Length: 67
Image (cartoon, rainbow, N blue to C red; front, side):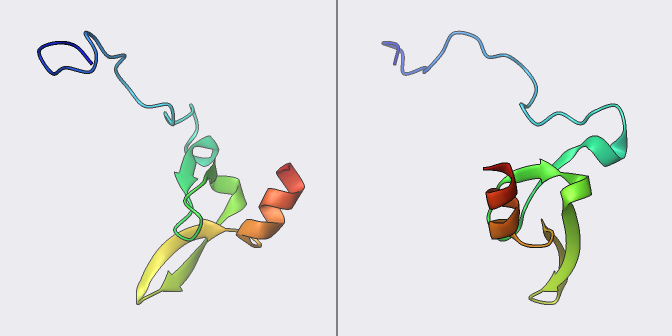
């Protein structure tokens, strides 16, 4: 931390989760586990009355497959 309270002098703009060239290749975070996954590995489920993106078939199954 700098003396004036700032944590850094400059910051790289953008996000590490930038969208790829096609919409289907972009990542989203799972509503249940919070991990970023490609949209092709997500499915929409109704949770608490709203449609949310979640891992498909499940968070645990994807963790074991990539793990």
